[in-house]
Image (cartoon, rainbow, N blue to C red; front, side):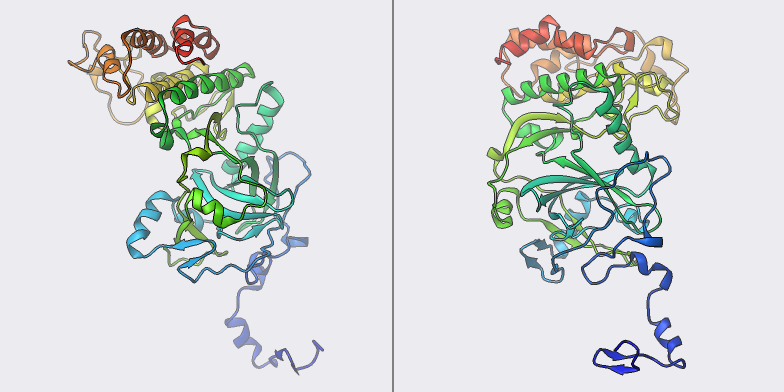
Length: 451
């Protein structure tokens, strides 16, 4: 009986001892969000997390994350990966998201092996971004592997969901865009929940994996990415954050019913560590290094464009014009010009150069931009000196001949034509995605590889 002072299940303190019990326990007001063992609390009643005000009315797939398996996080090695020793902790930290974002309640702490929403078992780490962590998970209900993109608990995290809805509404062909298949909410450390996007499972990105691929695969990637960008632009959307880390290779499906041990033989076992912090974090989690496929045969040569958290409709004015990844940032964005299809095309040409030559290509900026630089610090006057010429060995022609691939002179000439037309500083002179797809040099280059 729960009313008894003494029972099989322990002793209820009398009024004199209640103060001591309260001092030793968690605050009552936070009971609704504390973990109970390895299981999540039910999010109900007054503890139901609120949707951000910007979210439209919708049917929520799930508001709880109940772990259905006990997770051994103390052993150095288990079915769910390996805890690294002190020598390996620096490598894991370098490959992972900042821990202070967990301390601030922005990222959702996750353990390999836990089950969320009573459906998705977390099996590996795929990566992270400024507004999300991304995990490989097994959909227990459907018996297939998916990617879970768990957004930060703020409007920055919610924004990608809203923009993907806009893309679904406006873009006719999304076959080369990484669009969510389902979405639900998970309770967070405070009032705001975490949006979770269920995505098709993809492989490594261009930045990390392109150098491992053949010449024909890299040429094919350039064409597929251009087709993806054209589809996005045809729908009136500007990506704004196009870089090689946001372009994904495909990944072969694992055999139905394949166990996690088999998957780890191909993908590598998760390398992880406890959060390196003295701060008390509301839910148990781990720092996990992203997977690195050990067998190239599981990586497909299909290309998908991802990460739409900064995407805007064409013509939208933005306060912060610069692109986060500076090496792909169109120069006009540093001179007070809003992002456009043309600025996306500059970023695309940077990726094209990476895939073809593996370095960026620049020269003096337009004289009309002098005096409008807006990226902190003082601009160098030499940037706008129209009389400057490339140093020996640094011209576009020289760089094309220095490609690590053995390229015939005829192909070098085609590549030069493409790069010259794509790397126009003035956005109005830059080719669009559709124009480049129909460009004679681009088509001839792709024809050389049967693409």
